[in-house]
Length: 445
Image (tube, rainbow, N blue to C red; front, side, top):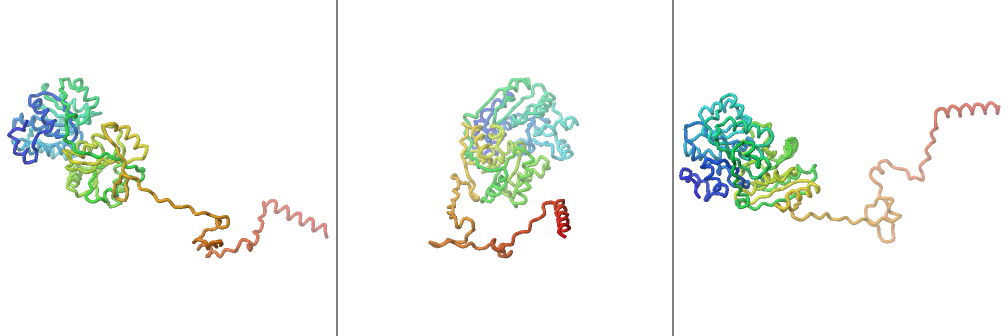
């Protein structure tokens, strides 16, 4: 199967030769208005898989028709950037709506009446309540990274958006992993959902090395520093908690390591600049949490570094999916102590073969470095009590060389030291002794 002639020139220009398994599998169902769940490995082209067939159905100038929801600002911007050239080819407008962007500027851009909106749920509902976004013309709603999007408040917000849309709106859910919520979509959204799973046949991913580096908690940032000293090194470092990210960032800044952080407190422009600088190789380390790092597509990313051991296998899968995309090779490094290593091996078995690597200088080695052993010095009865500065000749006992502090103090040999005067045991006893001396003197007289 090939893409529509509307997009063929752009498809060829971007270097694509054929559709990936997920792109081919969902093309006709989406064109025929079916609601689906698409499961495919990370980096397999899911964005174009759901956008191209939907773009073919859009009527330019007829208002909002396709809504794409994503769990993070970075993924919203990334998805918009992927879709925009194809939308422009059919004279359609794409707008991004995220929580950290300037709301007045977003409202102004919405006056252009975009046919496609890519958004995070919170800001979208805020603008909907202000009547700046209306859902009555929607034809399709896509939930990207659905396993992450449909958790906690995301599920209720997404359902609210669907309920505000036309009853026959088409739904599409896409993810690299299947979770309990994805098995209950028909219950939550009240429509039949066809599952299309190509994870078993998709071979678009490249070879990825999964390695564990034994590291104490206090040494993790130093490991990042040494790795960053490698020539042309680029690594996406993922943290379990934002507090750990901020603490590591402060240390790296002090160590003069070039990095950027996708912090939840940062403005959208700062986050976009961080991603741009990282993609262009201007910085070596990009620090992120799981939410910020989810779905990021960074061309030819050589390293993903787990600063902390992931809490679940599904988390590891999504982190590892940032590297080894579209046939390229990559490496996933996880830092932790020996206990963490054992737990991680149990967590990943049997899907992943986890190997151990050791940091030697600024390089990773497969073999643990051997620490040279120092032979113990045999101490005799005559010499064990004093430090020596050289080896004694045969039949002789080495004389001790006085230390600098001893020479300065000009210590007197022990035999020549005068005995220290005895201190009186107690003031009360001293007075009684003096009284007794006076009594004996009187009697003697």
